[in-house]
Amino acid sequence: MANEIKDPGIGTKIDEKVRRMINADGSYNVIKKGSAKGIRDIFKYLVEISWTWFFTILFVGYIIFNLIFSLIYTYFGTENILGIDPENGSVFFQTFFFSIQTFTTVGYGTLAPLGIATQIVASIEAFVGFLSFSLATGLLYGRFSRPRSKIKFADNFVFSKYEQGHSFKFKLTNLRDVVLQDVEAKIITMFNKENENGQLVRTYYELPITLPKIDIMALTWTLVHKIDEESPFWNKSKEEIISQHPEFLIFVNGFDEIYSERTRARKSYVVKDILWNKNFTTNFKSLENGKLLMDVRDLNNVENE
Image (cartoon, rainbow, N blue to C red):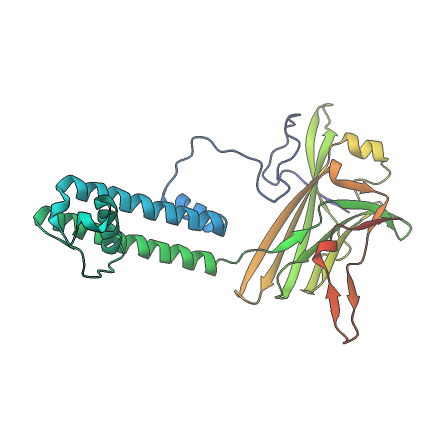
């Protein structure tokens, strides 16, 4: 029997404006306002953003820091930097490259600070550069050492025939070449239901899955919820299911042998994601050399029953 859950932490009150609690990409559909932001939040942001944005932020920060120190050197006078010659081009650019040499502690020897003020600024910049590279190294390590889930879910799920009845089927695969071990899945559905007072409330059920755990996930995995007497969708028509605005939350976790840690993924589907009376196609085939070829691009392919 599907286990009814009082509240998994999302709430039971219905707001018609909010159709889903988890976005399709697995992120929570919640905007927090007024929460304090700290260093850990910045670290979390820089670890989780894409590599493109990460290196863009580092590069922009690198340029800004050197521009600021270049202006400081210019304020104290470029004559206090040994080696700057107007005949070699723009004085500001020479000051900018002196700042880069100081920031990175390269020190080619052609430019050097003169005077107490300039030497103090150069010392401060060298210290800031040392801290900056240490922080960048820590962020790089954090990004590489953090296990990232590459579990991909199909864009839709299907309502199809199964044995003597029907079922909901959800398909997923691992995009990495590494094989996930001891993989477990859980499906929670929530939909509108009248309580004893005649009020519509959000009701939660953990749906039974025909195969909730597998030892290894090398190919695709189709989660099947059989709609029988134990299902909260038993004896409900297509129109009745749609009217309840169900949301399906998929939680998957498995052991990543590369990082020696458990990796997790989640996905949300709403009623508009259902493909009625369809079935997923097989997206792998055998080759002449005895191996299996799987094309993850075919994960969304379906066929009529």
